[in-house]
Image (tube, rainbow, N blue to C red; front, side, top):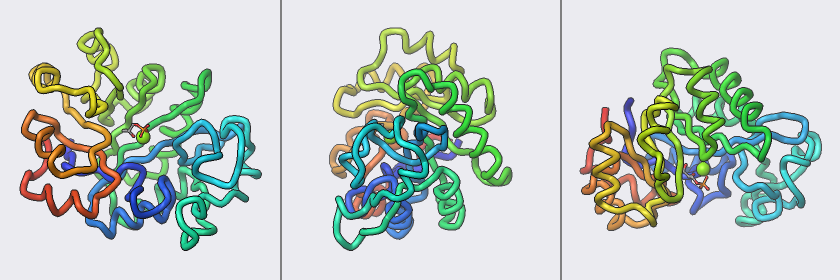
Length: 250
Ligand code: G3P
Ligand code: MG
């Protein structure tokens, strides 16, 4: 798997509203090769690109995304909260994001972010649409989730695509779950990661991504430990600064 060192987290989310088409365009403009985004389902089962459980922080809506219909959601403004210049930016569908990424020639990590109880449905829907939309000739996406159930669906439905399990603190059974889910790698919260953990994960043959890293100094420490790639909100500074580190594991 080709994995660039720098992955734009929810797009270039420091300079544009996260998980919007504007954020993905900004990531491309900043020189990122890959973006990360989160996919979740509306109440009526439409996959949209959105991070939080609730609509309140990053849109002018309120309440739970999982309890909001697609029709309601399409009328929300997901840009004004960030800056007036982004007024009118919408919560994009997964299909809209895939089309935009293809146009921008961006690779991606799709994080499946299911609400409790819809892990299988969220993963199945997101994977089915991605498989249909993504040109076979292109490099495969990285599929990730904090949900083991969602990653298991990825293993079963798109076994040829790389996949990683996300964690905040490394789980005690990481070796076992790595085998069971046939993981390519793990995605770790960089705040809780240490050199020994990185060495063990790498020695066991896993790729390692780390979130969220917004300073060059921290990225360079993580790369020196063996981390393959970092998610950043600020690709505009991180991409040029980390260029000399080359690409992660091939
Ligand atoms: O995939 C890395 C990172 O996006 C995981 O955390 O909460 O930003 O989706 P979060
Ligand atoms: Mg994410």
